[in-house]
Length: 278
Image 1 (cartoon, rainbow, N blue to C red):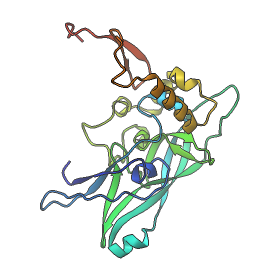
Image 2: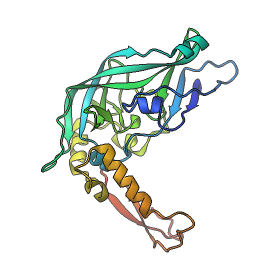
Image 3: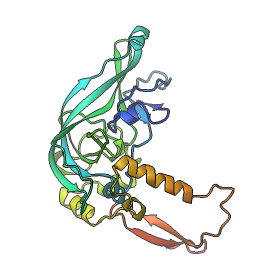
Image 4: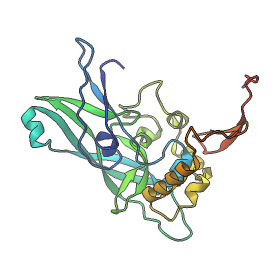
């Protein structure tokens, strides 16, 4: 990736959390471009808020999938220490206006918040050195810039606000085509399976696939909890079921699960080292 720096973030704070709606300062890290080359972007890595890699995750953790346009942005203020040092991070908050809700989670009873008319996202901003700014992006995600439209799976938070499942779950959607528009952190050849599966699809195709997708059974058991609490329960149960490598001596059989990110369906694939056919 010529002209791009890679900034590794520690834990889940900083730009990664900012792009999922949780604010926090960027984590400082040293990085350098090739000699004589000026970096156009700094690419930050971080941990997603919630599972997002399949449509089964979208219908399992999101409350609404919306079409939203970035209509305005405001800059954050670096700390006094950063200003004195002449280098640091400037955050950015983008106001999103919802133009359409294309899918909502439906429950017979219990917790079900109404879709928002708009919401704010604390997204990746800039690293600065002196008077020079360099844009920050989340690896695998759009930067989210004013004037562009996106499809976003939103999950309700305890405080009553909304945030995406993950920065990487935000999809460009200019001119009604998924994948068209601003996507500065998504690089050719490095797209996720879901991003590739949804590429060039329209709203009708997405709505149809969301309508047929089903959450994993373990996730569905905790449907009455808010999304973050739901994931905490699911991850705890998965951790309890998954033995450590030292304990994993059982024969798990020949069948493994291959997950299709487009429709959330699961196909059994038989492992056979002699079978190399497709």
